[in-house]
Amino acid sequence: MFANIRHRYRLTTLILSGVTILTLLLSACTPAGTANKPSQSNNTNVTNGGTWIDDLVNEPDSFIPNATVQTFAQMVMQALYAPLFIGDAQGQIHPALATRIPTVANSDISQDQKTWTFHLRPNLVWSDGQPLNADDVLFTWQLWKNPKFAASNTNVINHIQSAEVSSDKLSITFHLKDAFAPFLTAWTDGGFAPLPKHHFASIPPDQIKKSADNRSPSVVSGPFMMSESKPGDHYTVVRNPKYYRAAEHLPHLDKIIFRAVGNQATILEDLKSGAIDSAWFLDASKIPAYKKLSNYQLIQTTSAGYEAIHFNENNPALKDVNVRQAVAMAVDRQQLIQVARQGSAQPICTDHSAAYKPGYQEDAKCPEFNIDAANKLLDNAGWKLGPDKVRQKNGLRLEFQYSTTANNAWREEDETIIQSTLQKIGIKIDIHNYPASTFFSTFLQGGKPGTYDMAEWTSSYNYDANDASNYGCDQVGKSNFNWYCNPAMDALFTKEQQTTDPNARQQVFNQIHDILLKDFPTVTLFSANDLSVAINGTHNYKPGPFVASETVNIMDWWCDNGTCPAKG
Image (cartoon, rainbow, N blue to C red; front, side, top):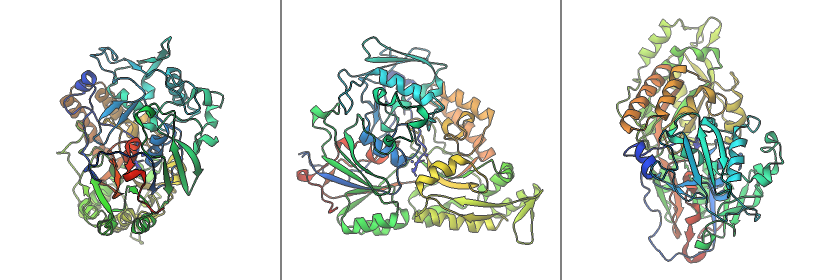
């Protein structure tokens, strides 16, 4: 969930064709997000070698594809696993282990969109030299489908009815239960890459996340392989000589050290001392300090994510839509953007930022910031102020725990502002933050009222705007951490997933937004710009808007003269 749950954390999700979804199916294109401004020189004399140091503000919780919604984990997985399809800095999807993008025109997608065939490159191998083929893709789907594995996102996978592998094991054909235009995105980027059947088949599905491979994968397929795993400190990956693009002299780097610093203040000190080459998902409150760094370039790109307050509807008081709507009316989005984000965010009130076309709705009917109207709404709903100025009704009290990821200054600023305005409508919030590794696992997944009541994080979708993963009834407790279910919404999810015309699909998204802005399972605050930095002398550092984000093109990173500038 781009934390990056995009968490930024980000909850992983999607973007379809800028012309038509039918165009996606016919021509294999996905629409671009905002292009990144190059952060380094245009020197084309690529030199291989060097050790690149990257600070991670959140501790990754798993390096097994589809075992986590955490963006920082998926960023490292982009280094470790080669997916069937891979994105780029503009949000376009390209073949990776697959030889081509499936389309109706090349007969890899049936006319009714229920049959999809993926063709794999020949002679692929895992890092241990064992063959990598369609059997691994079949095994991976079946594992993700198994409830004992507890995949982080099964929304797309649940559409599969059956699959079969060709006799040469170079293709796999999926038969879907229904037409499902976003199916390709279930296999895009390292966080959703195939797993090695020969390595995991003998491990019970419910034990895989508990195995040593969870933080130190021993069999991988990506440009790099794990050489040192020190949870809470750093993860070092080194060049994988069996990477399918090794003949192209990729990756360029010898080694990358991902330092799990877990603190924005530490990242700033590392930047001031020149100890790192890059960092992503930076603290907006520190923008003036980043701009003073003479040896780094600050990069701001349009995010696919939406920052939101999420309600745990397991809490009886939060089941009352009047309470949730009152919170939405008492949030001053402009103040949050200008004060907490230093102006580095875009105002939105739905779950689709401007990166999604279709998806983004410019004329959405956003709730007006109005304290008086919020108080009147709660009065009419029977929530009366107690002697301590906190509203109560039928033995329930509007006092909630409010949580986000720890050691994040601008989110702490959000909390302070929101705490103050909610006090004006008789709602008391008690702030209790958690490390990202806890927040995005046991805290949210537990769904325990009184512990998790209201929580703030950034979510996004993969390369398509399909938002069923965050709000679908079948995703409750998996990636739907609002514990919200609306059958009418589910019906709209099915409709938008089967609609190919972009204008018609946008109308369905607008209907979904209408329900979101009526039921308020979340209160969208804004779409924060993605902030990152790269040191001078590094090249091809181009974070993308989706899934792998910072590391989407990690195999292409390189340094002047094969020596990266960071002091380490």
